[in-house]
Amino acid sequence: MAKNFGKFVLLTAAVAAAGAGVYYYLKNREELALDPADEDFDDDAAEEEASSRNYVPLEQKSDDASSQETSTEEPFQKLSSLVSDAADKAEEKVEEFFDESASETAEDAESSQKK
Image (cartoon, rainbow, N blue to C red):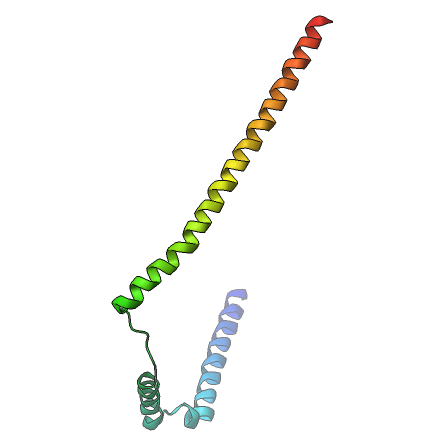
């Protein structure tokens, strides 16, 4: 008896879903119909936008390229000198730190041997 009730509920749900689908289609079929003029409108808008765009040329003039090379080299040279100076200072401080800790360790070892 439980099998028959389950089948009845499944059949009822399927019929209800099909009925709801038909009702939705019949209610909204006017809105669902596509107007051919709407399809053409999208293509025209894309063509109008494309024709009004301004693009940047990929090739540069030789005069501009040589002046840009010199202007871009200066900041990189300054930056590389600053980085190398900072690296040298950091290296000196690291060496000083380890020299101090090595000397403190040596002093501790000497004082422990004297005791």
